[in-house]
Length: 100
Image 1 (cartoon, rainbow, N blue to C red):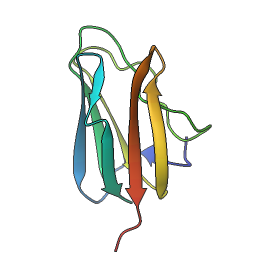
Image 2 (tube, one colour):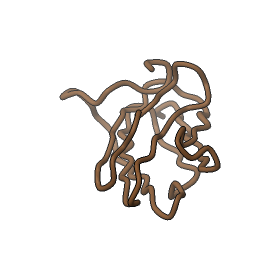
Image 3 (cartoon, rainbow, N blue to C red):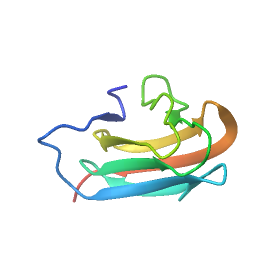
Image 4 (cartoon, one colour):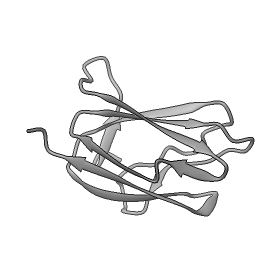
């Protein structure tokens, strides 16, 4: 889990970005953030979803219930493809850049 992102803590800094899960899609389906930014996935669908990186040990939200959210802070630069483990046709990318 720690390779791409770490759990949000009180010392988290940076911008906050939102990914809506709606209509069986991640919106946006590609998001570029800086290291230290927080990403919040908000499930607006009527069924549970996940945000699960395809790379081992990167990140995995586990089930996000309808009307619930899950947040992580990007810690490692890179490009991280992710899917909904429950609905694998739902695909997106998180791109983490080093701070300038």
